[in-house]
Figure 1 (cartoon, rainbow, N blue to C red):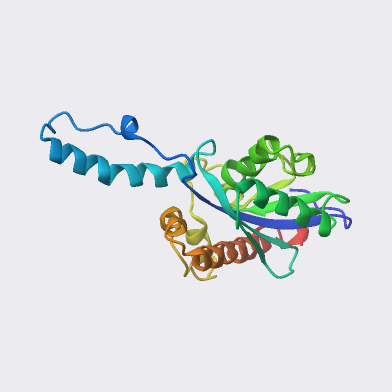
Figure 2 (tube, one colour):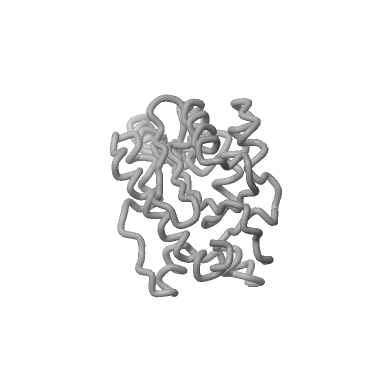
Length: 220
């Protein structure tokens, strides 16, 4: 990793997602072959459908972004939370980029698994909603020099081990996450627990930035 010039911005980013507005149907449920009782089959389907919907939070063409946590350099964390549609959230993100001058200088993006999750989701939505500024600023390719993915950087050549951000933070004595577990976010959104989700997103940005300041302190 080479040292960055002074005229650039470092942005730590984290997104939260849920299963999306298109829910799975009965056709998406694989009922075990030994289930023959109609009541048993119905109970299985009723139990499985919500689980399948929540799993869509990991599928970028089915799930949707709930919120975007951001921090420029060492400035306070900001969380953009979805009030209406995903489209409106992404437009709000574009406005945030403009307001913070991100369109005028090179940007280094920092986060955990942002190369494989957060940035691709954001890039895909920039294409979908025709938001050229975001398309320009969000790296879409692998191993782009504008990306500092702390998980890939920490793992190094040990590519078979996908360390969790929480474990890396504890390794460095930074403490672990205290908020809502990631697997609970999709259902929490459906349950209206928006403040918890926003707090989790902001905490993730804080922790990921703290790790990055250990791994690549010269970029800050």
